[in-house]
Amino acid sequence: MAYEKFAMVYDRLMNDMPYVRWVEFAAECFRRCGNPVTVAELGCGTGSVAIPLSQKGYTVYGIDLSEDMLSVAQSKSRQLAGHVSRGEGTEPVWVQQDMTEWELGLQVDAVISFCDCLNYVTDPAGVSAVFQRTYAGLKPGGLFVFDVHTLRTLEEYAANQPFVYNEEDLSYIWECELEEETCTIYHDLTFFSREPGGEKYTRFDETHAQRAYPLHELKGMLAEAGFSGIRILGDFTWEQADEQTERAFFVAVKPQEDGA
Image (cartoon, rainbow, N blue to C red; front, side):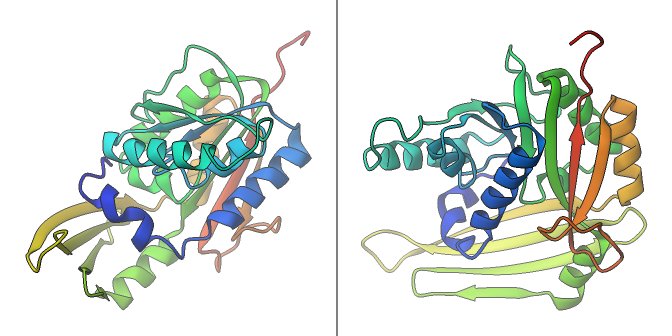
C-alpha cells in the first residue's frame, strides 16, 4: 500500500499508536534470540520504530513502498540526529521497495514488520513472497518478527465504523466495509486539511485494504519458506495467541546452515 498525501498527516493522526511497545517488543525478541547488529524493517512508514532502534545502536534499514512516507522518515531522522551525541547510533538507511520484492544486496541479522503491515498484502501469494524474500535476506540463524491484525480486529473495525476526527485545521471521515468471504476490509478515508495561512481546505481521499489470514495459514507459509521455531504470541506478550487475540505476533528463525 503506497500512502500518498496521507503521509503528510500520518504521524499526527497515529500519535496514539503504541510505537514504544513495538520498540520494546523488538528489543525483547533480540535479547531472547541473539542480539542482532543489522535489522531490516519492512513497511517502516515514517520511521517511528526504525529511528528509535537505530538510536539504540542497531544498524537499521527502513524499507517502504511509499516515497512520501520515506521522505517524512528521513526528515525526522535528520532532525533527531542533531539532538543525539556521537556513539548513540546512526541514522537508518531508507530504501524504497515493495516488501514482496525487497532485497538489500546483503543479509541482515533480523527482520521486523510491525503496525499490521502484512495485512496490507491482500494476496496470499504476496505474503508467501514476503516470507521467501525475508528468508533469503536473513543470515543463517536470523530472526523474523512481525505482527498482524486478526479477523476479530477487522470485525470490530467494521462494527464500530464510521470513525471521525475533527480538529480546526484537519478532519477526516473513516468508513470501513468488511468483505467476509475473503476476510478483507476496505478503509475509505476522506480528509479535509486547511492550507497554511488561510481558511481554504483541501480534500483528498484514499482507500486502503487489509486482509486477515488464519494464523495457522501464516505459520504454514513461514514453514514452507524454510523458517523454524515459529511462535505465535498475543498482544505484545509472550503468551500464546488465542481466539481473543487482536494483534498476533510471529517470531520465527532461519535455521543455521549445516556446519555453521
